[in-house]
Each structure stands twice: as structure tokens, then as C-alpha cells.
Image (cartoon, rainbow, N blue to C red; front, side, top):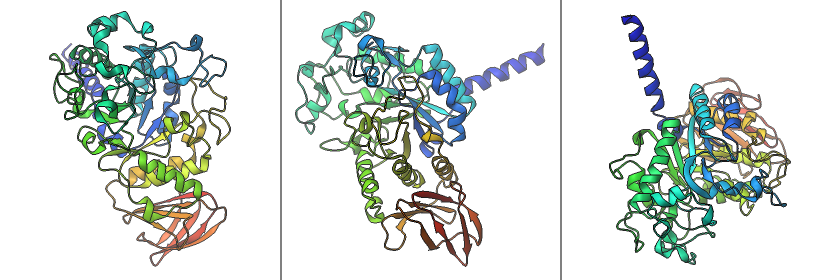
Length: 466
């Protein structure tokens, strides 16, 4: 009996440790797969493939109760009013589960599967606004925050006309979405219950949508606000009504602070990493113009800790500014940001269908995206990143060509990206030991002799060598 009790106690301790493990460093040093519009069940079914591809975390679409728009359809962008992905960005309550992604039980099951494979779960959250169809908002939610008159900022009736004006940016409407009074203690308590429930169910971190539209402590205050304390509370620095954010020190939290104007990303990075959106813009232009100048791509154009991307769901889905990019261009960009030393790279999983087409119509909300996350070049770069921790980086072009881009990591390895339409001979000084090397992505042979690596780099290929 005593022996059985010890086994049970050990199991309990193991289970409780598993709930609040420390994924923060693994995510920071690893790679995130943005499972855009995948259901919880779809993510769960694909966890083994995601782990095999070398990703260390998945990011879900918003898990909260949301507006059931256009007859509850599941078309990603239906022209006949049968769907649209953006309804899960229109909260009606802060409870886990919605008609697009699945139930709370589905979320729990997904998190358990992810934990089995050492995959962390990041949830997209959006406390800054609700659906504009205010009659659809849960009465329980409205009552909990003190009534409709306390749900929104006083300036909510105005639309942002000047994003550099911080009072406008943090308290006015954006995109027709009502701006929540995130400084209302009653709202903060209600929302805290939601994020803590996500953590209890297995979430390891959060991506804060429209984070730059929630005020920093020294930003101008809305007339209804006593203090701008949302970020200190929801990064675990202070409680709300005696309730703290659970496991705060081990959570990976980052914010969508799109750069430009008075975005104050340096101030936000005192609380969490923010997105390197400006670098993404520069990188996409370099890829499409086939001008990968190392001198221009060294600067991250960001002041601190960051999440990096080639494209995001916004650049793909909103204005389609990145939607025409081809799969190899995206992989080449992925190789660049993932092989580098800094930042945490996020891979956007596009819907299935022909490349270079926005919403090609081959998949619905809930389905998995295309197979690019499993591509051998993506996988090889993901594992390269794991092997190169703490190694210094050197970025260079091969010879005078802007079409061959090289990332060296100390004396351990390098990645070569050839975006040209022709095969090129390589003869490059390296600090690798002499020997025969076969790249991990395309099985290209590169002998190293007397400190020089040589071989043929095929057109539009990525070589991962270590």
C-alpha cells in the first residue's frame, strides 16, 4: 500500500510539473508554426508531423467565443456570405471554444497531444476589441464588466485618424471594431479568468493581437481609466483583485506591435517581444526583386526581443501584399530568418491550393494548411537553428551576386540560399573541418578541403550544411 501511494504521489508530481513546465526558452530559441484557421482537432492530428518538421511551438487562431457570422459558414473568404476567417477576431465573450475551431475539450485534447511531442501551444488573444455587432455580445460578459457603458473607452465613438497620436491609437476605434476599456478592473478580472483557464488547459503562451492599441503605463489615459496597468497585470507583475497570471515566468508572450509612426516598440519590449514587421517588409521586397544584399539584410530594424516572419496572416489575408509570393521565395525567406542568431521565427501556414494565389478556395476554416511546413528545406533549417544555439552569425553574399546569400554560424555550419534561375559553382572559405558534407535539405555534396567548401549550388535551392 505504501509502495502504491509513492507511485501515485510521484505520478501526481510529474503531472503537475507537466502542466506548468517551462517552454519559454524552448519557444524563444525554436520556431513557431502559425496554424492559421486550423481547428484544434486538426492541429492535434498533425502534431507528429509538426514535431517531425522541427517546430517547437504551434500558434492557434483565437480560441475565444466569437461572432457566428454569415450563417455560420466555414469558407475562409466566401463571396456568397457563407464564411470568413475574420469572425474569430470578433469576440462575443471570453470563454474557450467557438464554432470555427472547436470546443474547450478539443483544446485540452490538442494541448495534451502537443505536450507528448514537446510542442508548446501559443494562443492568439485579442482583448482590445469586441465584435461591432454589440447585440451578439454575451449578457454575462456585459454584466461582469459593469454594463455596456463600462465595456468600452469613452473615446470609443471616434475612429483613429492619426496613429502617431497615442491617445487615439490606444482608445479610439480601429477598423470599425469597438475599443474595449482594457483598464477597467472588472474587465481585467473577467479576462484574467479566461487566460488562466487557457493556461490550466495547457496553453504555454499568448500572441496579443493589436497590442500597440493597448496603452503602456506612461501613455495618455482614457477619461474612464485610473491607470494604464493592463500590461503589468497580464505579464504577471501585479494581480487584479488578488488574482495573478498563472505560471507567468514560464509563459512565452509576444505582442503585435506593427512598426511605424509612434508605435513605441522599444517600450513594449520591456514587457514582451514584439514583431519585426519592418524587417518582414524589407525581406519580402528583397526576395521578389532577387536582391538579397547582405549589407541591407543585417539590420533587423527592431530595438529589442522580437518575433520574426516572412509574412503574417495580415500581410497574406488583409491586403494580400505577400499573397503573390511563390513557395520557394517564402522558403528562402524562412531560411534567412531562421538561420540567424536573433529573433523567434514564425512560419505562416497558408491555405491549400495553387501558390501565389490569395485564398485559392481549396480549404475551409478548420482544415490544415498546405504541406509547405513539411518541406525538406523548412525542416532542415528548423533543425539547423536548434544545432546553432549561441553561435555567432556572419551574413554575406557569394562574390558579387545578390542572388546567393550565405549565413555562417560560428565554426559549426552554414546555410546557402540560391534564389537565381541558374546553378552556380561555389568555392567558399569556411571554418568547418575538412571532410565530405551532404546538405540536410537537398542532399547536395559539398567537400571541404584546406578550409574551403566547394560544390555546385542548384538554382532555387537551399543548402543546410553542418
